[in-house]
Amino acid sequence: MDAEELRKKLHPEAGKKSLKETYNKYSTAINIAIAVIFIIALFSVFAMWQTPKKTIGPPTACFKHDICTKLVFATTPEEQEIGLSNHTALPEGTAMLFIFHKSDVQAMWMKDMSFSIDIFWITEKGKIVHIEKNAQPCTPPMCEIYEPPILVKYVLETNAGFAKEANLYDGDKVEFSNLPK
Image (cartoon, rainbow, N blue to C red; front, side, top):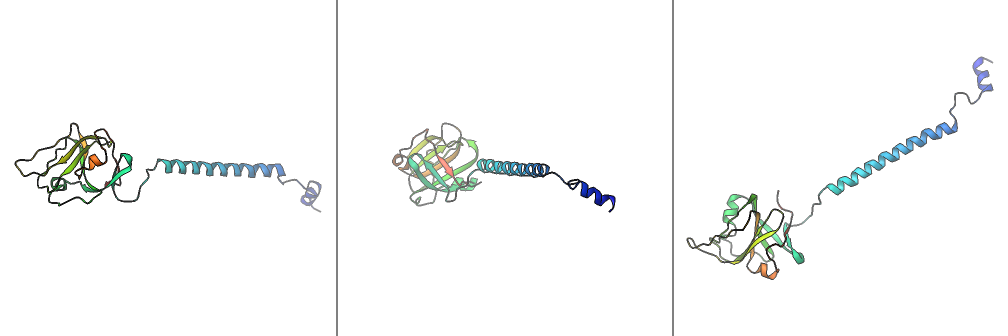
């Protein structure tokens, strides 16, 4: 019998880790894995909470009492100049939203219109600052120019009578969804 075999016979536990050392090693590894999974889950929940919710559906403007209208847009200077001119009507439950690149005093007129409308001037934060109710069609040079009292980012045009039917006033809020970028 050589020295190595003799050592193994006399000290069979030599070179082996104790059960307690093995448990501590695996316990530490498991605790680290649980902590990493918890941190990843926490960051995922935080990221989902911070990500704005995207709604699916047509673009809308919603007012108090859950009254909503579908939107069509005038976003370019050419579309804004034409607006609803040369249209015969707005479909029921639809409005035209003029989206301007920056807030300004956005003047509107009724040139070449064939029907009356309500005009809403709305701030970037969605506050109605002025409503021109039942604006009438006109033929130049006899066209009235309508302006808001302060700078606005949006102008909304609806069929005449909408403001009255929806009981809307200056100071009310509008919430837009699914606007174009």
